[in-house]
Image (cartoon, rainbow, N blue to C red; front, side):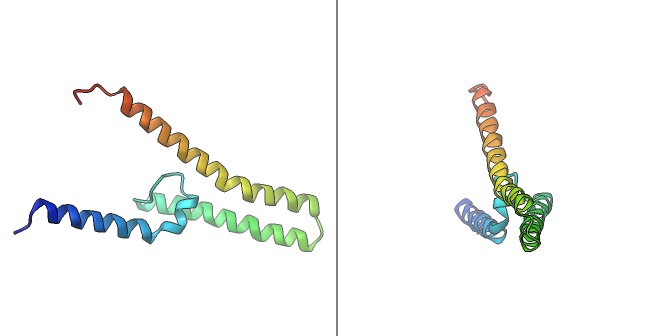
Length: 105
C-alpha cells in the first residue's frame, strides 16, 4: 500500500535528481531552479553567449586589440553577475508578495 510518507520520499528524491541534472546551468538561469524546458533553453542560450564572449575575447587578444578585449572580459564578468542580481530581485518580489497575502490564505 502506498502511504503518504512514501510519496513524499519519492517526490523528494525526484526533486533532488532533477536539480542536480542541470546544476551547472543554474548559474546562467534567471530562475532559481531549472524546472521546465523553457528554463533550460534560456539558461543554455545565456551559457552559449558567455562562451561566445570568452572565445571572442581570446581572438581579440590574439589580434592585440587590448581595449576591446578588456571590454569583452568585463561583459563576461558582468553577465553572470546580472543574472544573479535578477534572481535575487525575483526572490525578493516573491517574498514580498507572500507577505502581502492575508493570513486566512
